[in-house]
Image (cartoon, rainbow, N blue to C red; front, side, top):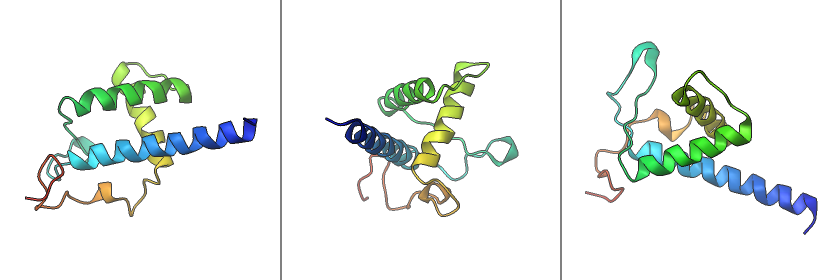
Length: 108
């Protein structure tokens, strides 16, 4: 396999992981959960939380992120992952989860 093919596959995997992270966060988003400064607080329950933490730890290592705490390091990695997934003003993460959608992602 050529180096260009490996790079392309790694890029596709990175974007897929970023999209999965955005899906998990959107699934557990509750619009009223706001922290100071307008930050959105998302409580991701187990087992999704274990997946989120593992992906953020790997992403932090790949991106060379460091912070004063594990949480700060993961936050920095999350921001870069969401940039890869096209997180912007039109992102679905900016909108509340549909009222007809249960926490497990099925329609109610």
